[in-house]
Length: 221
Image (tube, rainbow, N blue to C red; front, side, top):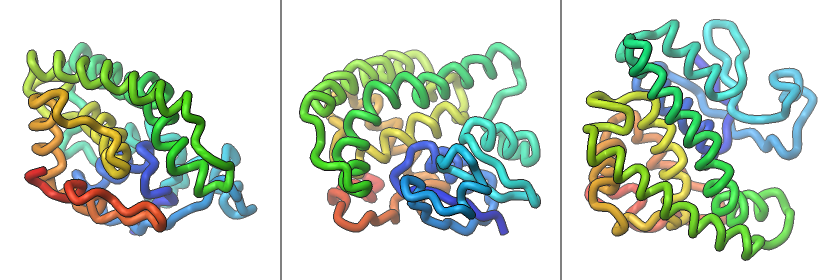
């Protein structure tokens, strides 16, 4: 069985979990306190970051590389289109959420509200929280624009771009930091994607000291 060293609310870990689950790859989840790296974990990934996946006898790190490996070795169901232009758009949006959205929103909301407490780094920086709360509005509006022109974020079919976005938004939704009333289109997209079987283990996550809101695992909001 595959083994994933992860942190439950990490969007990068969640993206990998969604890819594995969508392709029906059984995986053992091992929570890793990466901020207190043990020698064994550093041997698995000298960068001391999660996710780290052991699959096919290979130890791999970096969520983008992991998802590409999964796609290349388990191509069905496909999460990357075969057309080069369509594939480019998926990769662009994965980069958007894992880079721009992460830096402007996730790191300023989730990391300030949750990670700092878990790591014993003090209280949230109110300026960062304020900036993140402002920035997420822009990103939700951009998602609204995309979904107003497409069935899914990158086109007519669900792709890794949708999982990347859902991984970040689900982590933030766990701490009630997503205003789902801002866009009915985005809310409908999220309801559709979180109803997939691949989402079940994510909706079952429980983080000590941080109970999720009632709507978190409600498929109908």
